[in-house]
Length: 390
Image (tube, rainbow, N blue to C red):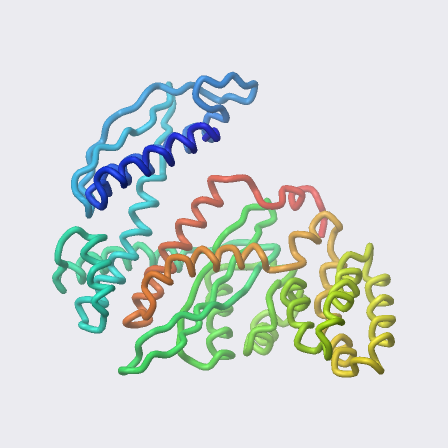
């Protein structure tokens, strides 16, 4: 979509809100999804409307109306058509699925009588009507089946896998507790990114991680050359138990952040950060290790805790040097998974406290399934994996 189209869309949405307030919601949904479908067609054709390019793969053929019953009423969407093609935009179904999960989560909180007035208002605003316990049960059962099938789908060869955990507040026997949500993503030998799975539990960290990693292997995940993660509690022992022969790359971004806890004076932080960056940006492992030894010696007297921590922790972040140069930037941090976590938190913040583990897993699974489909429609993450021997 062009910048001018972005501006026109923003202007139209603002005008609708100013004129009609919340009564404009159906129109806003129609406008937003129509624009998403138009952009999806442009990506499919590799050309914007009226644009002439050598990469164009087909021609637009107008629009076909489709009326759908949504929570905010009947909306007629304009489905973009492509001449002599089976193209059909996925934007509509994906958007409805993830929002449906959010709606059901909020509705479940309301039905169970554990929600606040604010949650009740949000539920009614999203759904447009009161939701009964029976309606929630039927809708969630249908959605849960789809999401469970996705979480349990067979996996294949994954060259690199990324692991991380986020924490969501869940109500458990009248208490609000922090539940760990474990998420795994991966890159296949062909360079395709995938969300491999997710799991939620209030149980002990090591057992949860061990069970999660074992489930990935049981679903057919194989050929893993490297695990990239931060040093989460329990993950190390679980990783060694289930993926013992696979090397580990400790996330360089997180380890550099952790260094601040060992710097004795604020004035030293910038210098220490620069020293660590120089190791990470070294041309090879030998140079990085020499730089590490020099840095340990440098701080042995002025910051002994920092020197001891550097000696103990930094070597785990040098594993990427054992892999091809063109892969190192991709595997040196778990930042790609951090971006996924950020999108999840943006949506779960609306809920606040989940009524149970199942409702939390439902929403997060729907979001991850949508993200995974977006990746499969987009460009491959690291196409050099096709031609480089690891």
